[in-house]
Amino acid sequence: MSETFKGSFTQQEPIPEEGIEAALAVLRHGRLHRYNVTEGEVSEASLLEQEFAAQIGAKYCLAVTSGGYALSTALRAVGVRPGERVLSNAFTLAPVPGAIAAIGAQPVFVGVTEDLTIDLDDLAAKAGQARVLLLSHMRGHICDMDRLMQICTAAGVTVIEDCAHTMGAAWNAVPSGRHGLVGCSSCQTYKHVNSGEGGLLVTDDEEVAARAVILSGSYMLYERHLAAPGPEVFERVKYDTPNISGRMDNLRAAILRPQLRALNAQVARWNERYAVLEAGLRNTPGLTVIDRPKAETPVGSSFQFLLLDWPEDKIGAVLRRCAVRGVELKWFGAAEPQGFTSRYDSWRYAPSAAMPKTDRILVGILDMRVPLTFSLEDCATIARIIRAEVSGVFQEHLP
Ligand SMILES: *Cc1c(COP(=O)(O)O)cnc(C)c1O
Image 1 (cartoon, rainbow, N blue to C red):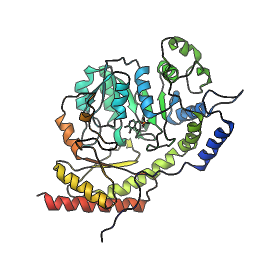
Image 2: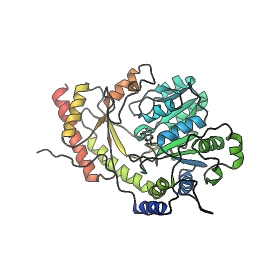
Image 3: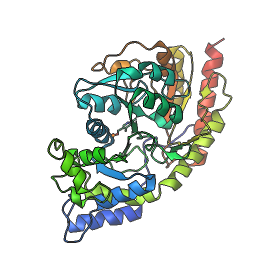
Image 4: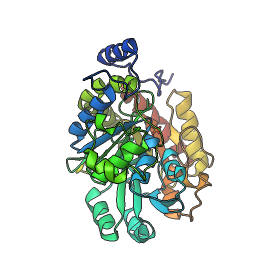
């Protein structure tokens, strides 16, 4: 009998006890709205912002309702107008082009390389087409950020980083989210901290920060923020910035604060699991492991590999055979969007020219989540199953 895996790819760890206690305190006093404070009280939401800003080394931080909301708020705050074109990754998830569409702007997709990062040659070629790049560090793979910033600076392109998969990661020791003008993270259940829903936006730009606070629905109570610029900056922007409510509440903030304090330890645990999967899958015939650059400090909260140039029916066979043995792989190349995977050509509201080099990569990307409820032994089991099934299909069907 071949071994099967019994774990769940979608089961997260419980909220830490400290977070549960803090949440209960908020529930007991009932002041869940971030601006509902008693005399002298500082809200959990404001404390969360202050702590995350310090942790990531940013001047300003704003907590909001979701990662997607943080992205569209960042786009608005840097001045993207309806109808404007915004550069973004062809390999990403639906909330990224969705954030561009949310403000009536149009994505211009940039290709992906075999390293699963944005194709910098394609970016250089397209940089003249837009004023803003919404850069998705998709699945935690960070491109050469030095070269990316050079290309964008030279072309006058403002960079907004989508760090939904890189909270806690870095490039050349600079935290992800601190290379561009704005960095956005998600606190949604499947990301690196879990408040169900939630997002964090960081920047050093005082006007962008002030606009973001007002956009999020501050009702002009911005003086209650601890990680926002001074009132004189708000004076400059408050009359022409609309209120598009998307505030973080104190309950979620209370749950998140202890999780942020534990983030580095969690990152180390993710990376141990990633290393076991990587070691187990290296040198599997027909399977390409993604080499991680030295300058990258990753967070291995998910794992990808390539079945490059495989016929689609054989990739389907690997997926089915792994699924039978309890290993849930996701396939970004499938013609129809399934679950969270989708291709740029399935976002029909954002038409794109064909990108054959990118299509070749997308068709071969297999992906899985690595929740921290998996033990190292679980990861070794999963790697053995994938290795056996990939080798099996490869040997049976390919010359
Ligand atoms: C999850 C995710 C987001 C946004 O997250 P939400 O909080 O669900 O809105 C943005 N980008 C990527 C790549 C994501 O996976």
